[in-house]
Length: 112
Image (cartoon, rainbow, N blue to C red; front, side, top):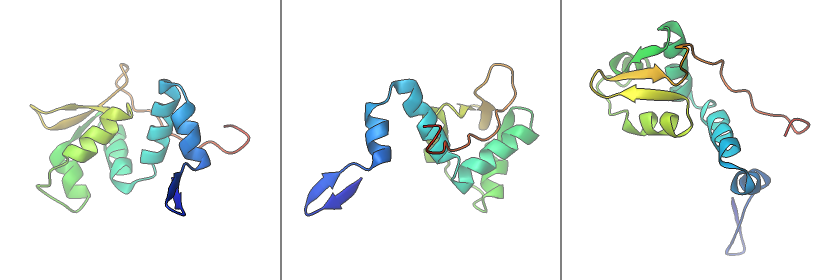
């Protein structure tokens, strides 16, 4: 979104997001989130931990031991990147097989 002369104008990506079916919006969200370092750390920890990543280990790897990761948890859950076990403070693969998908790759103009 861009503000032009006191008017909010959706970017091409914003228009695509706003007009896409919910599954496509979720995929777009996952693609965008995967570009964030904190999200990449969780995905890498899930891969290394065979579908499970300890929240304290993630916080430590992010250089923020003891941090509240609730926003990170919510972002990934919303995009379908992971589940979260609050009792055990662990990120869990969102896929039933227990494996973690490779990081979503942004679509190029010809693939959109």
